[in-house]
Image 1 (cartoon, rainbow, N blue to C red):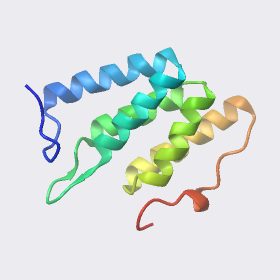
Image 2 (image 1 turned 90 degrees about the vertical axis):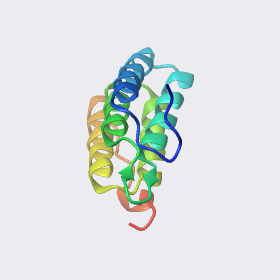
Image 3 (image 1 turned 60 degrees about the vertical axis):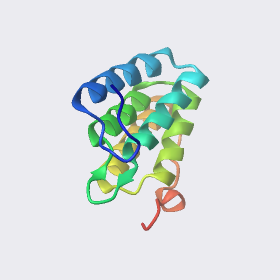
Image 4 (image 1 turned 135 degrees about the vertical axis):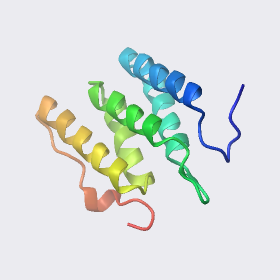
Length: 119
């Protein structure tokens, strides 16, 4: 079975997508983290009269990217911060970026410069 683009992710597909996100992010390669970033964007997409396609999966993607210690994962989180409008997801992204910066001893991207749509 598959989900339609304008429908929420089914519970089963959401479980599979979350597991896939963690497996891919664990690899840490550029291609893998880019796929996880795209999955996060797809799941955070707003469906009229419903909300996010799958907030749980989008949040899992964000968490998985946050645990991945690679420049690619940080770049994906920065891209998500600019693209996702939901406050809860944005807070998770900011927290993940802060954790990544602390692990690396670097700076966090300026949140004001990466405000999402309508922020």
